[in-house]
Image 1 (cartoon, rainbow, N blue to C red):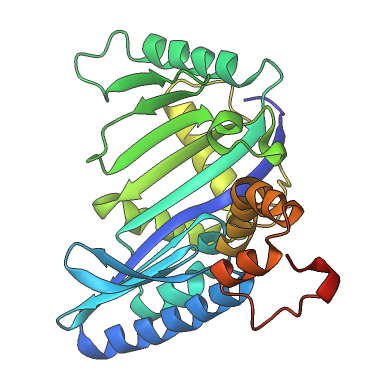
Image 2: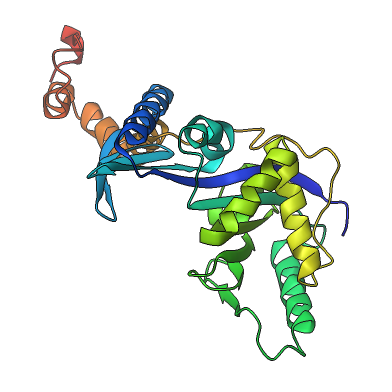
Length: 281
């Protein structure tokens, strides 16, 4: 294990379900409250369906119901900050992901290739072992997998800088472990004994790395809180960015040609904007 700069760590995904009517109602009520908070942050409420569940998605939460059961999924930093609000109602989870994001001195892809070699060396003499897979993309992205999507424990290590295209994650690698089914219960017991979640995540990933022959993962005593830095890119911010890059040039050209009234009419903004006489066509 080595000392590396850790950018973030914590719970990255939580799926919880309620299988009786009363618990389902309580879970959905809490989910609706979280969704309203997401809406206030600038995310859009949208219809959502998954595995027979019907409900809504808003930003980093999806929730739905079927018959007398309900499901809630929390992702990204919302999972890290709000997992307890949902888990305390159901006292069960069907999937939990933990992650650490850090800056290796040798660069993301070189580091991932090093981990790949360590895994191959560790399992070289094993007759049966988890599947080791490496995927690369034309834009320089690189992802290493250990296990299969259906596995109870599924590890991935990837170039976060390329995946996110966010300046906050320049030079970063993210290591994630996805726990499902029988692997979730002992994980949650370990979580309660090792709060806060940022320290819990570092311990889980570092321990996993050591068990699988990976010696180059970071270990830290006081990792930073999850996603210290830039706020999440909300739907509102994405829409504004799209307007600025895709719509603004055409609008400015039409305005320069004296078509401001037509622009406002076509955008449905005439009732909100008063055009000065000297700006009309």
